[in-house]
Amino acid sequence: MTALNQNLLELRGLKKHYPIRAGVLRQAVGAVRALDGIDLNIRRGECLGLVGESGCGKTTTGKAVIRLHEPTAGQIRYHPSNGGGRQVVDLAALSRRALKRQGLRAKLQMVFQDPTTSLNPRMLVKNIVAEPLREQRRWGGRELEDRVLDLLKLVGLTRDHLLRYPHEFSGGQRQRIAVARAIATQPAFLVLDEPTSALDVSVQAQILNLLQDLRQRLGLTYLFVTHHLLVVKYISNRLAVMYLGQIVELAPTPRLFEHPAHPYTHALLSGIPVPEVKATRARIVLSGDVPDPAAPPAACRFHTRCPFVLPICREVMPAMEEVALGHWAACHRRDEVARLVEAKFG
Ligand SMILES: Nc1ncnc2c1ncn2[C@@H]1O[C@H](COP(=O)(O)OP(=O)(O)O)[C@@H](O)[C@H]1O
Ligand code: SF4
Ligand SMILES: [Mg+2]
Image (cartoon, rainbow, N blue to C red; front, side):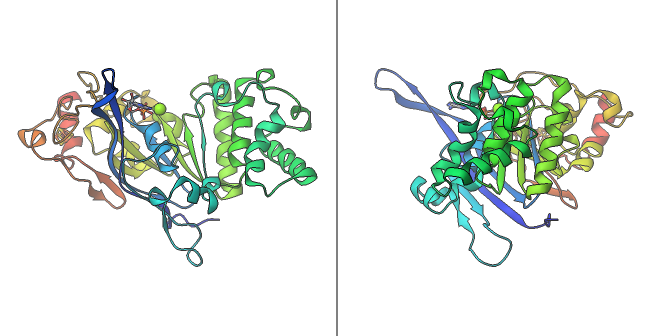
């Protein structure tokens, strides 16, 4: 059993801004601040859920953490092993070549939302799964074949599936193939980006069970990205709530469902059927759309939609403060929000 209290990754001031280009010279005229300065520890062996509405920066966070997209600023401190041995490395400071040479590229993998587009339709399953192993040049011949078969078995597929193409499989099976490919290089960390959102409801639970099982068997750490809180309720140890490129609340999963402290988290939970959340909970209704991440509101970014906004919220950015052990929220009114929700919407 892996200890849950050691950090595998520490994100410090992590940013990803996408330039907005215009004119014939394609000059940058602004930037989408998709990920705008997050500090977050990801503990070894945990499943950390990252939730928020579409467009709030979840996928960008996942891609920046594993350097699929280049961060604009900040640190990604990675602890390669438990305690002794190698020192912590800042993944953001390494060149892509150095990442690969030090074997770090292989340690950080991602499973995408839609296996129909993430798997090459012209490749046989055995080659899809073998490809990352071939890139490592550590595997060949019979050993490689055995390894590919072992991986397929790990995700619930068989030898019969080796010589088929992705289109011959159901959505759930295709996601199994994507998972086999992601774990091929024995990674320490997986970003799971809405891994069940493109699947039929009936197979979503099977894929969640598989991911849960693999995490335990292989000692993996997950960042599980989803816009759907219920999907991560049972699989994640902790939840981070994101709004417009920033983390606004972080708590152990049961605590977040029982005692949310941020008005935005209250609003997200309000969209969930009653038996799954506290039946007595008042439902908070938000007005307005998510603002443009190229021009986010000043100070508290949620102030344009928050039912409890005060003048200070438009002037001073609320910092993440601990409201209970391991439970953090960035809201000036964090200690009174539960009462305010009850009074206004109860
Ligand atoms: N490659 C890109 N180029 C420009 N803007 C992008 C790119 N990827 C995402 N964005 C923008 O960044 C913001 C966050 O997107 P994303 O991380 O995909 O959010 P989420 O996964 O939470 O839906 C959105 O406004 C989106 O349009
Ligand atoms: S800081 Fe103010 S505007 Fe922001 S969430 Fe809290 S009460 Fe609402
Ligand atoms: Mg996304």
